[in-house]
Image 1 (cartoon, rainbow, N blue to C red):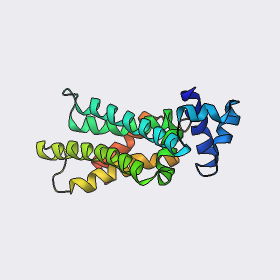
Image 2 (cartoon, rainbow, N blue to C red):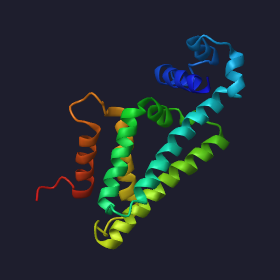
Image 3 (cartoon, rainbow, N blue to C red):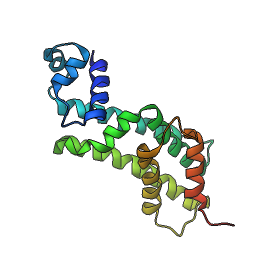
Image 4 (cartoon, rainbow, N blue to C red):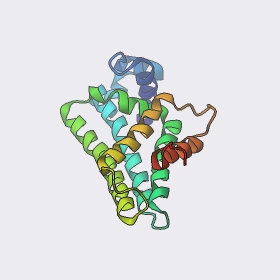
Length: 188
């Protein structure tokens, strides 16, 4: 039932927004009582925190697996991370939109935990980019922090515009995005 509550909440939060969705709306969608909700969650905000944690912890785990793959180059790992972010938007688009759009509704303590995990994702990527700068795969005349934020900005913002049923697949979008980010648009 906890999973059903989360799934219904995600659908309603995406459709109506966190503030405009009541616990009763969630329960009505499932046809159960509020007591069922409170058996699993203390509050609607705690439910939102669980949605956020599940999303960011899943991304961190996938990122860790990519970064630990010794058979891949830095460029391949950057591609895999960008692809993973875009693919997660295809597969978990609602959670991604809620993660970025509804974070403002978390209390200070919960927000701190999410921001720490989000920053960990960023710093992991930055360490990968720095490795590529050191080993000669990537330009070393750029600030690693700006390179990292540029990659994340492009990939994370795709939750707003990427459409799985669009002209390009998530893989193709990731290929083009990484080519632009790593090679630029300048004609050679």
